[in-house]
Length: 316
Image 1 (spheres, rainbow, N blue to C red):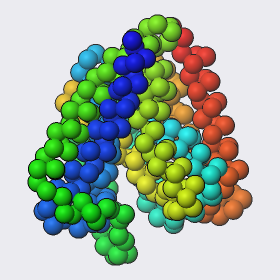
Image 2 (image 1 turned 60 degrees about the vertical axis):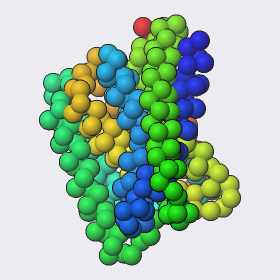
Image 3 (image 1 turned 90 degrees about the horizontal axis):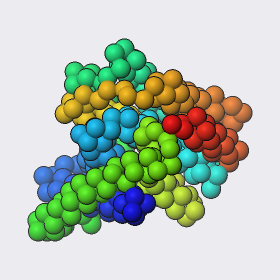
């Protein structure tokens, strides 16, 4: 039964996330918000909704390890799994904004998160507020840069002519699917953790993290296979920043998140920092500003090593 709950939870999160993105974009058009702003803010927040609901549900139901490791694991999966597999399908060109803005900001958020957790073994409401305000500042800087560079985001124009009834219906479907999906996924994952003898932190950093990264992975691989612009490294890094700033930030504002599993601070978060840090030498050596198939293979192998370590060291 627990496996059925997890699968249904994943399906509902994907469906709910899609409906929430569609309704949010359509609603934004109603208020005459520009495509650039919609793409960089509304869509980003909406696509973080599955992680947010899962972390919030986990924190409220007494599983803080899942709440933290959902984000830590998703950030690792975004780089090791999503970026790695996408690069295996086709080489990815890296924009200069990656090392000028996105990567430094991601590293700052990651290190600040580690400090907040290590300092007193809890992510408090004030610390969550700091992370969320930091995210807002980052978005303001991004928007200013985008206006100077006249960048336009890939937002579906057909959503500009959606009726109010459809928007309301999509919002209701999205909200309901995300609510029940997050509840079933967390409940099912806790049962699986108990049945196979691993901690909730292990399930959070592996099963749940991969599950909430599946939509990004599917979209990236399909786009790469079609030889379209698969995914920009900046978008993936932006997703990692959103995960820390909005998911953990907002969750801890609503309910402080204590560190209940020691391996979160002794192992998992260092893997997150390591995967983030290795991107700099990876994009400069040997080919500059490119993530080739070989580099993608290295990332996937690294992710495999992380998964092996998680399950061999995570037995209760």
